Picture (cartoon, rainbow, N blue to C red):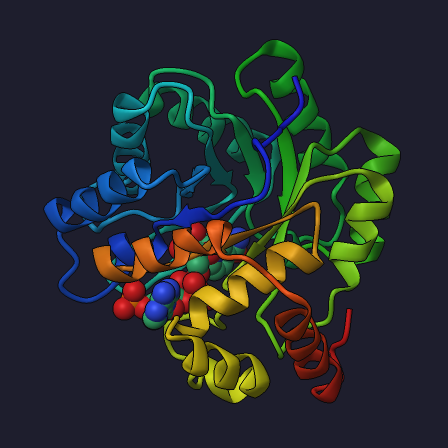
Length: 280
Ligand SMILES: NC(=O)c1ccc[n+]([C@@H]2O[C@H](COP(=O)([O-])OP(=O)(O)OC[C@H]3O[C@@H](n4cnc5c(N)ncnc54)[C@H](OP(=O)(O)O)[C@@H]3O)[C@@H](O)[C@H]2O)c1
């Protein structure tokens, strides 16, 4: 089974909803339920989005979205895990990938829609984990497989071993080049573009896309919504994975899918990325 999302739109990532200081499950559920009501396309979680007490906190929250909207795709990730209050580690061995996949399926009560190897950037040889991911897909433990944080060379290596259904890499607007996105478009692989705003500690988005920000101000919409709308318009085959932790911001970002993109916004977006040396 391959991985497909219905049309352009936004994926909600729940890392900060689980991991941020003072995060509570109740608040995370409020945000996720509001996102699902507003039409978020999928939920992005990971084995690593765990609390100190619960290795599956992130997947339980994703599961609540599935109960609310049966069939909503759940993306999760293997091979990276929480060890303690401030410690995480990675293990891309076949044994670990399989154990993680089985645990994800157990918590979700059904095969994850997509299982990604979380930290391809920490792996020297992808042979064993990619073969194991493919075996898990063949066995129906997971519906689809892919890599996260992979280089072009790693994508080539992995695809020579087996077919990938999706790739999830960072694509921060005005910061990251679209190299892996381009690769995925050419290969016909959905590209999940995480942290489009640069993450919770980034400089204000307006500093990365100032022309889009000026236009958004003049039109009375947020720069986040305008930038996401322009991104969806300019990057078919890419799905932004956003990390909003407030109901207000999650609804604002999801509404990007319905914002009309005209030539002025298109130009502002293209000029912003080009002037920062990361043009599409
Ligand atoms: N595969 C990987 O290795 C990997 C790594 C990192 C992240 N991810 C995934 O990507 C998701 C997003 O990552 P991220 O949270 O670092 O990046 P992000 O979405 O680029 O940044 C989140 C920040 O943007 C703000 N924001 C979002 N929408 C907004 C809006 N409409 N108006 C104003 N502010 C807005 C959030 O504010 P509020 O919190 O106030 O809403 C938060 O401070 C994660 O949850 C995770 O699922 C994957």
